[in-house]
Image (tube, rainbow, N blue to C red; front, side, top):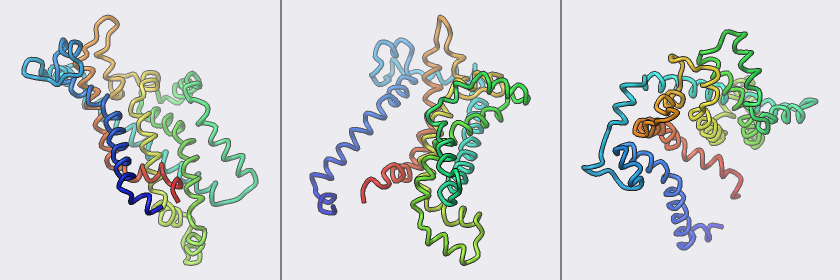
Length: 279
């Protein structure tokens, strides 16, 4: 295996594949960013060309900051996304630890029940969810979005984390119990640090749908004070006229948090995805 990994041809192919994947993945992002700095005519006339002295324009960014409360939308998206991720990782990890650590009657059925949410889209229950939120007085609040996104993200989190936690050495946990550690300290001090790649994987895959979602913000929190970034950007999209400069500028700025998160957790993410693939 080491000979294969150290082979110059293998390394060259791996680097070529990585570069090719990066170019393909980043191409749409680059197109959006370069078009956000161009005039409307240049966007449609030469969408793949770089902006020059004749086509360069920041009108879209000026429109975003003047006509829409971009910072409020950004703040709402950050609160909803970070809050949802916190509860998804916390409750998902705790449930996964219980399912993988403690054997009880109905353990398998409980795991299957919690994983059903992966196969059944939560949007099917939109009407019932809206009724519950109205009854609870949570319409037009960020709390409603956090609750819905937490519920939708838990099945995948539990499914992934439980598989990783089963690989944690039982001897390590038993040694902690012998030393007098409580189950909470075993969970937070011993187990969680060992499953960081899985936590990063769950965080990245959960963040992107939450950050980009339009459906639930439109249904549960359409008020001006609770609009998320994706919903707020829709103000520039009309039935007959669309301000493409503003739309592309808003999307360019909305991409930044996702890119930053990917850069921070990329190493852990790759470890989490490829764990167990190569022994």
